[in-house]
Image (tube, rainbow, N blue to C red; front, side, top):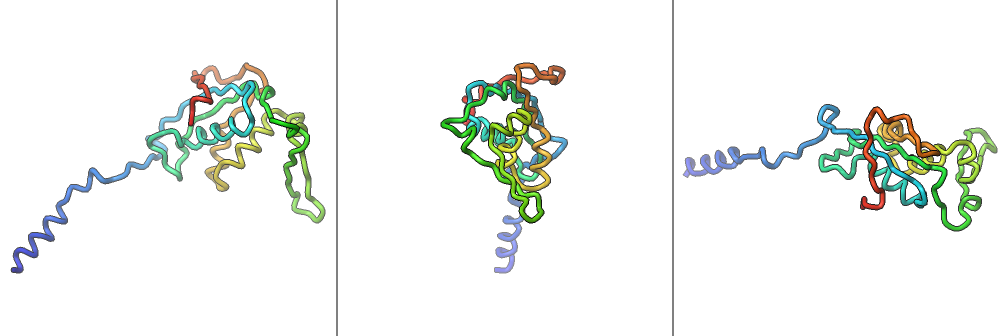
Length: 165
């Protein structure tokens, strides 16, 4: 009776568990690419959600939440992005300086006037994790007002943002 019990335990230990292991991405195994996204005529929120997913690496099969496995994203024609309705002047973004009475507000039109990348960075930053990884991922975003960018040496591939889910 004792021998049979030991044999059963032995069989449980020798189960092949290599096929059940989840492979996690790390810095050495991540395949980062350069991607160009054209913002002409695109809605700001819709394009930024897909850019945030690209920066995060959610479209990749080896996505790992705690690793920077996303792509480097270049947004061109950022000045031709669309906001529906009267959101250019009606929407208000708030920030606080940290001092009493230091609440500041700014509209998307004012952000675009300061620099075309400021509006995209603010919107995409709100869609990324609120930690050091989110700050690191935001450094992989490059925004340009015109159709020219300075990253031709990286041979970025152009993708249609509407084809992504």
